[in-house]
Length: 379
Image (cartoon, rainbow, N blue to C red; front, side, top):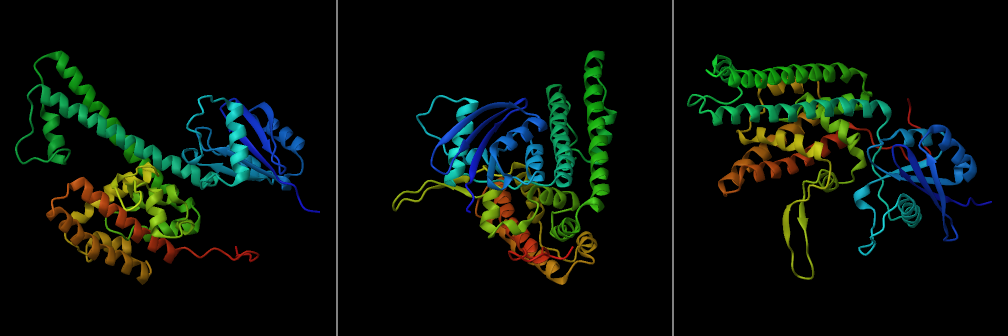
């Protein structure tokens, strides 16, 4: 006897969950609001019928993935939906939790929703660790700006030829004093904040290195392979893997570039084609580390670099060949774009987009292809 599928839309908040069900006959039922508690979710599933007949979805958001993990552990098919890709009506000006649940259920039944990739608990924990370092780096940048602007307001400029935030610069900062005690207090506090942030970043980077052996073997192999690329050190490679999970889920490099929000936006109609700046609609964490890595290609290609040789040791020849090809293409391209009058940031963004193509190629080489349906891969 064929199953009758029930498409369930959940509007999830910290304390409550609004529930709606779209039936196969076209009707949509509101089931009210339940507490956001595991026992309440289990009671709801018992009322809805056999778990094999259920298809559940909810929006990705601040509540994370514990609800997804609970539902999948109970045998329920669940999808976490990208909020920005949910169809909306331009004239709809009424928004409630119940209406959101109904809209999710109806669109889910119609197949109009886009599911996001959901990591397992271990990968999510590692991603939180990597993002904690990223947040600390952003705090460090703000703290550095405070120090530099404070010195600028009081006429203290670093000696000519001295680069900012180098060892010599730090020694020069340590020698600075102010006659007014109030200014000295402010300056000392700013520098103390810098020291605290530097220690925090160092601790987090050590924690990332210590966590690498605890990852799945496939993830460890992918991180090591990505680190063969110029500008992609271990922490950057770990960030890429924690944000993407597996590169096999992207059919083409263009799909990966669009996911990172690093492709040009377009508004074309008829014979008119209009492209603009990058979309910035994808993964912002991934986009930031890629642009940061792209600056390394402003120098001439040097595949024999001692730093790269260390990272490329024990890696397959095919992976090293891709990394070498990336240097020979991206380094000259960087200079050509710069010579054409492009702004440095725009050039770095272009290089980052092409770097993603080489990252995709490494993923296709290092990761095993998905198992055919009905075939069990060996453990």
